[in-house]
Image (cartoon, rainbow over all chains, first blue to last red; front, top):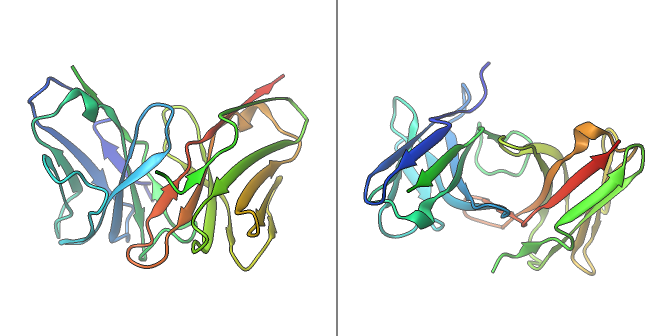
Length: 116
Length: 113
């Protein structure tokens, strides 16, 4: 049973380009969380999705950022017109049930986004 | 700002010693806490959790202590090994909604041989 898969591991973009980060949850998991981590910082919640639904996007910037988790395929975190401040590690976590209140929340290895 | 923070950003110990990593939280309504270990280039890995109705919980070589009076959480690692070198984060669950995790800044543990 493969873990949470994120790709690409590293993504380099120039300012103004679009970044698309993918997350395939563990098999059987229908809850996906996205977190952003700046260097020397903890992870900050961005968005929580279930299949075809955004449940909580309170941590997501209002502009340029969007997320989806379609019925089929991976969850996508999309950042339009990237700026240098978007450079960070983006982690996805999945769970078979709602919430992270147990050890069933599994994290992927992250996508390191570098904006030139 | 974040409701979860850490006292020390770095901790260096000798192999075989016990390590204590501290965490302060500010949201007295939080009722669930988790310690994660993050190795370089990897995602956080669950270590141990504790609910607010407990003050101590033990795992394999790790113990978490919760002091609700002063809103303090600690992770104790017994007989620290080089493989324990990593950044350790505490996280709390905010009540209601999506139960999203709120992470502290992290403590970097270095184990010297």
